[in-house]
Length: 290
Image (cartoon, rainbow, N blue to C red; front, side, top):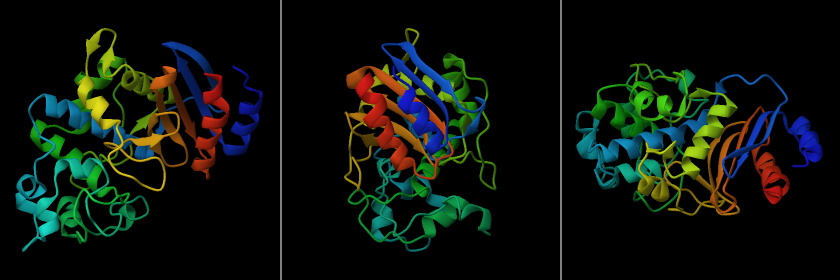
């Protein structure tokens, strides 16, 4: 792979670490900064999605369950018809029906509320769930809460024996809410090699070294386009992209890009202020060489 132009773009866009796998082999590994665990921001959402898929297989939840049944104790008085119709699937597709994004990065440090579940459910549900896309941390946060309550442990402890340990990933740090619940919408710390492993697991439809650790049917469903947006669509906490790709996508350019048609995975950690341009760079420069 010709990395000359990649080198130039990496310096322009503040790419820190880049790893590419093709046909199960490491094709490129380049570090412009030390490879350390970094905040994956919203790429963490995709790990929450996988936790939901595993929990579904274990019979802990169903995607058609309604929030009014799941969070009965935290529901506001006289909940709206829209809130009453919202399901777990709506949490995963950014189609919750709220009028604005909640629990976003700039909001959380300033919040006075301690009970984020109650707070989130008290916000307006102005549209019918499942009908329109609005990027929102509320959905993945509540999805993560559901897994934690049904499993009786936080997301890290839940995923350690089921996902992280089988893949050789040591115990990660993950942001928590004021009550100690894992924040399923962001704040998972991993390095680029671990992000690459995650993408390879997805490419292999949940199979790792001969063991099916995530249901293949769930990964196929999660990576489909369920709703249109201003880009290429959205699945179950995965963004769709060009070349029939899908990805875990975090602020400042944290990517695990899965390209089934190329049998390839691209993982990036960055400090970019223009992640969209960095994604275009990947698709225009790296993908054509695969």
